[in-house]
Image 1 (cartoon, each protein chain N blue to C red):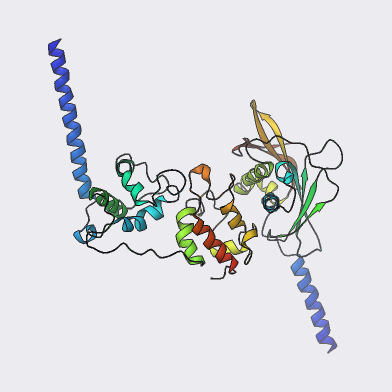
Image 2 (image 1 turned 90 degrees about the horizontal axis):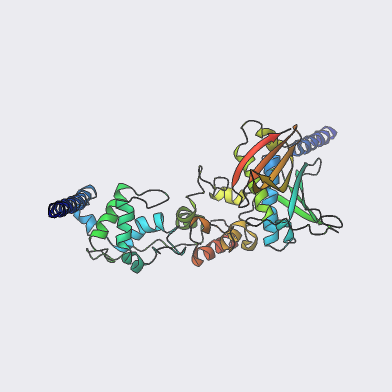
Length: 194
Length: 225
């Protein structure tokens, strides 16, 4: 009897470890992209403030340990307000990218209006990430797919034109991936910079 | 001067004559290229054309998007010359996809017969298979008509496949069985901003109220069938 119980105990532990260590079926970059989609859904359903869609400035992804079924946590942050902390929401996903929960962090203040005229910030972030997902085997892009840590959206000037820039950081390199989009979300170009 | 005018007039007559011969000739050629057996000719009706061509090949843009509405017999008939010109002469339609030889033959002959609403053989128009709240029916009547241009393995919507398993397992929560209000598919079809599907900015019509209600019902029923 003791042997059977011991066997069951080992089996349970093994299964638990295996479940926790299950390889993700979506990349870090995909988890960030799914967060941009999730923000749109939560705003549409009036579950979070609409300013998350228009004033979103940064998405940071973390792979969490020992919190199965949660695998990814993505922190979505609005632009820095004149005073106080920016509004933030944490979104949890499983290893397949399925959304599990979200939590708005209390005390945040809506960020400044970035003046996105054609597309909202959420759509621009999403479109920038599509570049990575579409080119996930090309050149250095894989470094920014599997090991992406954040995307920061900002307004920049490129060849005299006001554009949106999604800057992606990765834990696999110190280089940065800059993805440039027109304000309507159309892809312009991308570059890896030191 | 008189000689010049005479020459110009003669040249003009020759050109007009050539052009007439060309159109007449090409029309006769077209009749040969698109010939159909007599029994098929007698079957041609608006209902047959709608089922074979207008619904699967045209309605995704030529529905309620503000162009010619191919769901209306009257509007199709009013635009027959334009349809003939854009499909057979300019070959600019359909913009997305193409018509098979058989489809072109049906369309060519139906137009040349005067676009009858009813078939000459007296058969009534085929009763269309109705749209019901099952995946198979929705896929046939909605996804394959209005979505497949982009949502296919090489299209711009390839990241969002519309087969049943993908819909049910999508991390985008496109289908939440029993909860149409929070299902991404319903939200994307019913929204009125620039994120609506099918996308208005690319010329696509919104789904009909009947299609949207049927999809809602299917999800409400658990999206099982």
